[in-house]
Amino acid sequence: MNIQLLVLDMAGTTIDEDNVVYKTLTKAVNDYGYDVTLNKVLEICAGMEKAEAIKNLLENIGGNTDDTEAIFENFSDELAVAYNDLNVKPIDGVEEFLLKVKSKGKKVVLNTGYTQKIAQQLLSKLNWKIDVHYDALITADDVSESRPNPEMIILAMKKFGITDPKDVLKAGDSTIDIQEGKNAGCGMTIAVLSGAQSREQLKKALPDHILNNLSEAEHILF
Image (cartoon, rainbow, N blue to C red; front, side):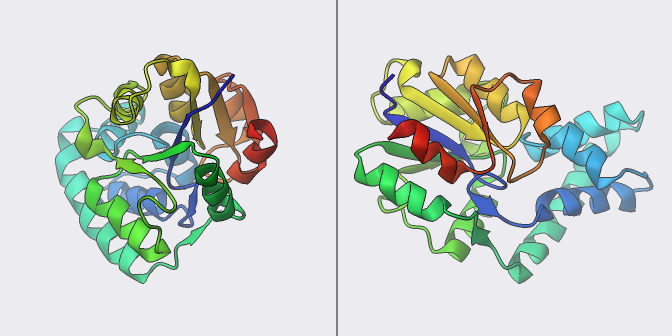
């Protein structure tokens, strides 16, 4: 297998933002009169585009899906404030891993269920630069279908002229990430334990590997 392109989820996979997105989402839902736990939010929402995640969560708990838009707006406003105050850092060893992958001539695409604005906010806090740490960023704003639909991976392949999905590795911290990779026909899917979901939850998606964190993929790739 000759992996040419790595499509990597952001929060929980490459970036440690202390689950602030899901904590903020939990608060936004509960501020609207519901009563959900962070664990429930992580189980249902991890990896999804966030408006869709809120709708799915409300369906799951028997809530009113008409509340989705108002909760999403509240969540978006609160998240912008939370991110301003947040100390964001790379997950251990991941920055060095990205630099090594790039030095071997492979392409790195960061993909996320976040908006472009939120993703850029994270990257600027890390001081990660395009063409140094990664080659492209693809967010929920760039596609019409959210994960686990493989549209983001297909777009990443098109950007770099890769025609065979077997040349693509997809890594993420949620079952949605792994399903996205499998739906695209990726040659390798890697689940990591550094983010939203547990080994037991991730196993259900049947990833090729479950690693403690992404930097351990170096031993698989090189």
